[in-house]
Image: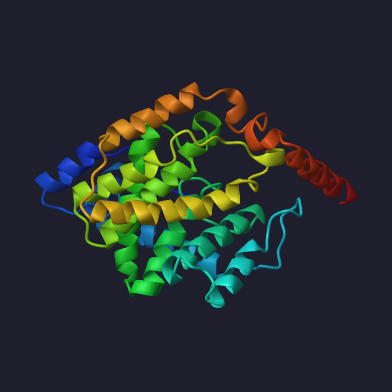
Amino acid sequence: MGYRYMTAGYHTLRELQEQAVLQNREVWEIVRNADMSENERSAEASFEKMTIMYQAMKQADESYNGALRSASGRAGGDGAKLQQYNAQGKNICGDFIGKVMEKAIKMGESNACMRRIVAAPTAGSCGVLPAVLLSYEEDFSATQEDLVKALYVAAGIGTVIAENASLAGASGGCQAEIGSASAMAAGALASLQGGDAETIMHAAALALKNMLGLVCDPVAGLVEVPCIKRNSCGAVNAVTSAQLALAGIRSAIAPDDVIDSMRRTGNQLPACLKETSEGGLAVTESARVYQRHSNKRRIEK
């Protein structure tokens, strides 16, 4: 289950921001109206569809099963470990960040275990956005309506990135997946906390800047290592980036320039670092052991 990115009435983050200001609307409304226009649906139908998307994220989180393992046998159970660690009060990051970390790992593991998740924007980065939004709803008593509006903001940012760069690890490296997800989550959180259009765009830019150059090097070709843990890091990055922007800090590099830099960086990455498992962590000795273990498990089945 995933987003269908719409052809928007905006093509850059600057245009999205300008439209919100000129029309005296919130960013989420601009994105919703683009969806209405592109898909010929009413405001109510659009909101209902996005609500279903958010509810699917909640269901995926609630149905996490720490006893499940992926087909390789190497992914699963870490979310439960982090949940126990957080429950013991040992996580020095605090309750909210601890919860964000936990939910991101759980969602990534659910993906590896073939559970129902929302690709946001991809399956490999499915844990970032829901981890931030679901944790915020639980800890800050936001309404479902607020969260759905934030999901529109995330979709708008994702639309711009998809049009001007890439959301696929195979073409842009992991920066295109976890990086994009982190930018989407940062903008969504900034909107939830009352940030204006400019703040939202800079939150996204700050988050994406931190992920530039992140390679896609899945061990054994599976979306497990290092993908799952990167969801946790991307989610925390989104939270910190949103706080920077809300404090009034602005990216020295314009948000759209950051996206363009991601596109150029992705094009410059060699093929071995773009989902081919021929470089990075995927060719380490540890990875070879992982590969042998996975192959053995498949044969035994």
